[in-house]
Image (cartoon, rainbow, N blue to C red; front, side):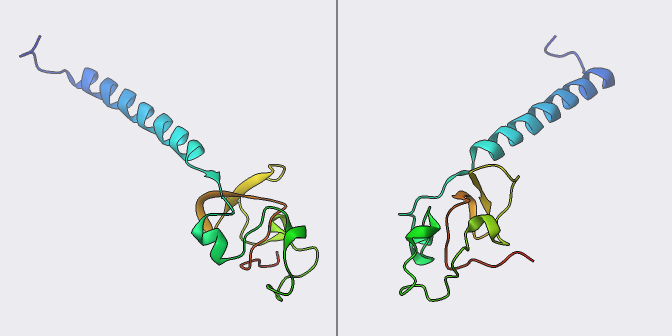
Length: 108
């Protein structure tokens, strides 16, 4: 069997199985690759990220608007209803929808 050439049918079958396995692995990696953003992350510190917008110091962040949070920010992605969702400001991380950072942009 070692020197036996592959038939076209067998080759296509193996290629299809490999492609399907690759797609499944990519989906798992994408889902597992989004971890929660830590408030101690250097990027979070630089932008004043907090998990609860009520903790924002308005003196330190005068651009803070009462009532603003990640939930009503244009940068927030993902599906509504999740308490942690991806954010375009912090790639590969999920932020608390009740959180806030200085990159807050009002939804249109």
